[in-house]
Image (cartoon, rainbow, N blue to C red; front, top):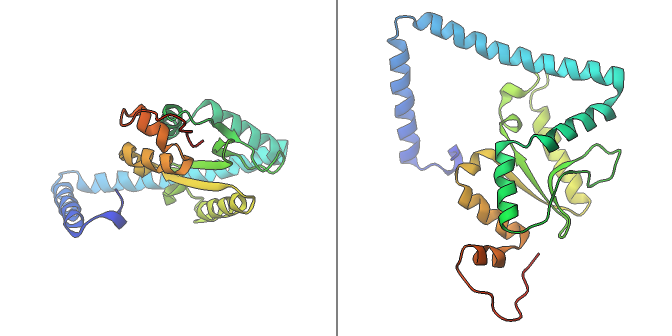
Length: 208
């Protein structure tokens, strides 16, 4: 659930929880050290983000961007996130054919998508925390990822692909996400069959 969809009562409940947590921390005997530790952890995350960018730059200078891109792509194929695995289960249940990390714009353009549905030329992208949390940004290049994500979606749409973005936070309600996937893929008829809601009428052709 995000702040946009919260009711006033829900927002006030979370504010009260925050106030209680703040009072509890302030009452800690080692409160000052606790805050110092939190600050060091935050700084360390920013340092790691910067080092990650520096490491990538050094690799590119030595081996070229194409090699880094393909290494990352193959790693993602073999190591789907838990949020991607949830979407994989949905697509498998709906009997929707898909390709992971497909280079839909052609080789050499360095654009691969999370899920490509070849039967309908549609794309599903699952955005994890790294796409939203500024802690993962380079300290000197904030908001770069958001701009890159928007530009990537625009390129796909200009090439004629329909794109569905799934926010990892929405997967706390998998049934709601499943319904979005059903509507996006046109698999509503298969979904009803698998859920045991209807029986297949004679001559009915499932949307694929």
